[in-house]
Length: 519
Image (cartoon, rainbow, N blue to C red; front, side):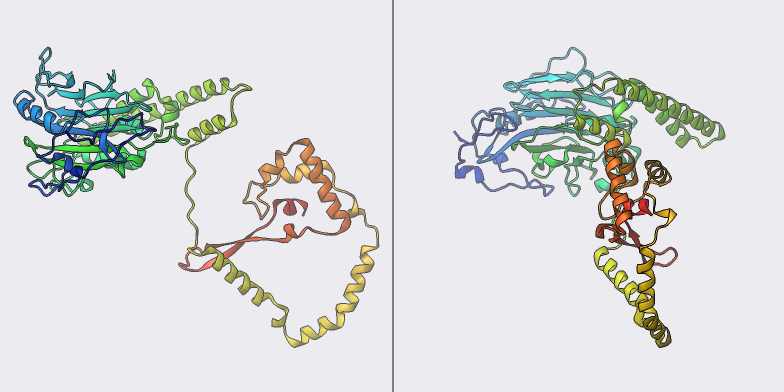
């Protein structure tokens, strides 16, 4: 009896004894060339696993997914796999099991989605008896005609949600809700999507499902495709059976093909490591465009808009185009109204014990992520120094003609004396700055980029009465002493590209907003 089975206290707590050398047997290879995990070695007997099993410090949850095309005819194969490989979870598609049909596999609890003749093909999720699990009812909507099963595995420490998806070639796929949920926590998505796309290295041209998966992966973010796109999952070379997982967990997950379990689809084995995981908090920025005010009404509006778009793609006629424009205007108006209502409801929840962190998290989720601003030059510091030196060289007094330099030398003493005499004379403009003048100067300023001190005009306008009094005193002190702070005379130089001149740069100087207000 092999001792490679460990108990797991949870996703964040792992206790694992050492593993004997017998666990490191040679890795077999399936006919398609995909390497298989060593636990498929036919000569190794294993003890019944706990909720998770593995070797050494590597703890893994084994999932098997397969489009079996008839579960009853494949029951002997499933029984053999259950005894030899002991997967913790089995996802089956196209089971062809009708309502009320009894399907049993020793050591597993079966959760069936029955077949409806002419409507659906049936799915099943088989969970090991010792793993506590509950069904997700209702599962997320993934499109008309798409079969979805959801199951929550109650592992110690943190649950794992698993979705089993089957899409026929005629069904419309919508994965926005499902991928948004997967981006926020430990969620595994597997099944037969019947998708073709260049992302999957499909031998056939891209179809609507493949394009939708590619776009949704890019829009949502945080979800990774586990498949090895060089390994087909169908006998005709297609990559129809896909697996998705939260991106931070995907790097250490092992995806492979089963060595002998197949119908017209190859069975897929996924070893999901369970290292100590951080607590999954809601993302600070929304993962979905309408996420912060999403509700059943928004879901229905999105469905209507997508239906109008599909209709226009099928029939490029003027009535379909007018219908699409009308539906789009109606959806935008309704979403604007729902957004305002959700914002008002949230503002009413603000109380004295509401934390600033939570408030800013919600505000950022409403406003959306800031657009990324890449540097205008690969080495902007060196370029700014070069431009500053070039400006200093061009504006140096040494570039003046000799006659001008001679006149400057003759007048320098008289100019210094005149300036000294003017400083000792009183002038009507020597009056101190008033608070009204300061407020008027700040109101006329747009909120531009700050200088070296990092203070913008919006910050200066909201410092309050005490801050405004201190600022006014600082400006009047500088005015009466005739002295400017060195920080006010320092500029931050940014090189920016010249319009209509590729490769040429021009400098802009960012001065202190306080100094510009004093001027």
